[in-house]
Amino acid sequence: MTDDHERLTALGNQLIDTHARLLDALDDLRAGGDPARDLATHCLAFCAAVTRHHTEEDETVFPMLAERHPELRELLDGLAHDHAMVAGMLRRAGELAADLDAEGARAELDGLSAILASHFRWEERRLVGVLNALAPGELTPQW
Image (tube, rainbow, N blue to C red; front, side, top):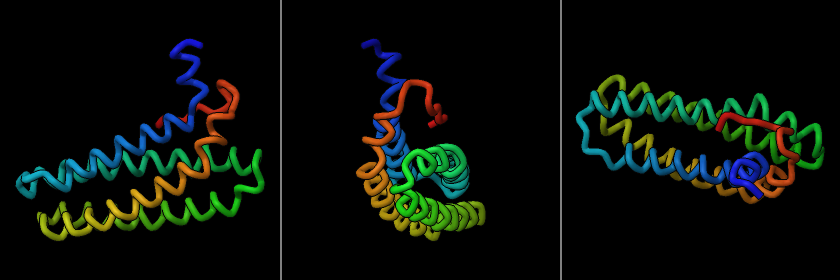
């Protein structure tokens, strides 16, 4: 099996890698000793990355999975609900960072870190196998 074939067929593994990169970026953002203006810039970039990831799931991945696996609909609804909660936290962190409230933004990011870690683990436990079982080209998310 070629690396390209594995990449195309292992969507669940791609999901895990994407989650790991997002959590690493969040850890870097939280640990950074940057001045408030730099925090605002980095926070906006991180918030945009998480928003893109969750939008892709909500608009592309989850509807396809719900159609093929009706038994997952309740789980997918719960994950989408989490996405809405995370979006609110991202918005607040971005607003605090834009207001140059580094302390407030970091506190919001600390809470976001705990929520995202839990959300990602839950999603991975339930969806990695389903995603890895998809045929090549059946779904091509832009994670």
